[in-house]
Image: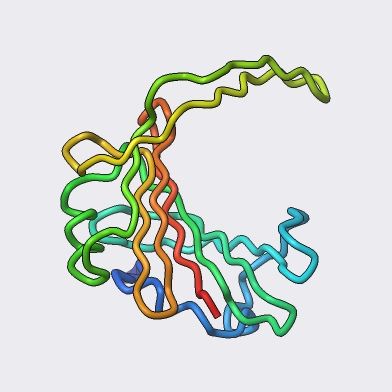
Length: 165
């Protein structure tokens, strides 16, 4: 009789910012991307299953400085920022520094470039509360900044932790 044991690993990282300041070489599975950020920053992708406050994340974007130190960690969660995640981040970082929703449109311009077509929309940003479904929420505590940016169609939210030193 053969017994097969399958081990599934899920990295549970509710304190994902603990990865900030670590060397990218600590993550041999990280793959450098060709995305240009700034001249002294490199971008890496890491296929890793992460549970962040109940959200299952399958891919992390890591940005490093010239010393290979991880300066930011970004990932996408499905849907808009939910109340449980908002409260968890608020519990750790305090009241958000900024919460903005999209207001009236200032202008719209069609952009045609490289066989792609996009619509550039400029709008007013209006301070708001969580109940008004902010498009941008920013926290800052000590040397870490957290940005939550909702996609306009509510399909997903970018969450990014940045080391500010």
